[in-house]
Image 1 (cartoon, protein in one colour):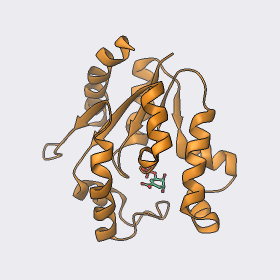
Image 2 (tube, helix red, strand yellow; image 1 turned 90 degrees about the horizontal axis):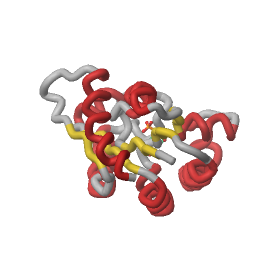
Image 3 (cartoon, protein in one colour; image 1 turned 135 degrees about the horizontal axis):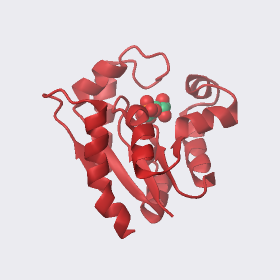
Amino acid sequence: MTRVFLIGFMGAGKSTIGPPLAARLGLPFLDLDHLIEEKEGRSIPQIFKEDGEPYFRAQEEAVLKQQSGSFLLSLGGGAFITPGVRAYIKETGVSLFLDLPVDLLYARVAGDENRPLAKDRDQFTALYNSRLPIYREAEVIWKNDALTAITPEEVVFQCESALTPVITRT
Ligand code: S3P
């Protein structure tokens, strides 16, 4: 069984990189936010508004643990911060952290109505800074300073190269 968990802050490109990377690795692609929205029959902003963030975090952990078999799964930006999620990922698979500068991340998601935690630049940056040491617990880290343009294809290629030796060991 092979499980790859794609982690990173909002705007890191998890949903863009996830499907082609999964295809390269020969794994089905899963997106945790989409699985939660399907199960709940409502959007992430609705869940936050109607039931609050702690409810959403509990759903992340529960839905993650319901998935079976091999896959590459993209997590929402906060899921890896939940201790139970992190422990489960460390036990069952390989985590890959997409590490990009916070200014670039904010530029990508600013004003996105679907992201309740991306409304204010200072709050966004503070949240990023508080999470960064935890993201860095990932087994594999793909880092880019974004000063040079890089295509999604190149990111996928580099991530695949970084993951392959780790996956063949597990
Ligand atoms: C969140 C990130 C979002 C989504 C929710 C909470 C977070 O996913 O799960 O809005 O806490 O960082 P993306 O990382 O795909 O934007």
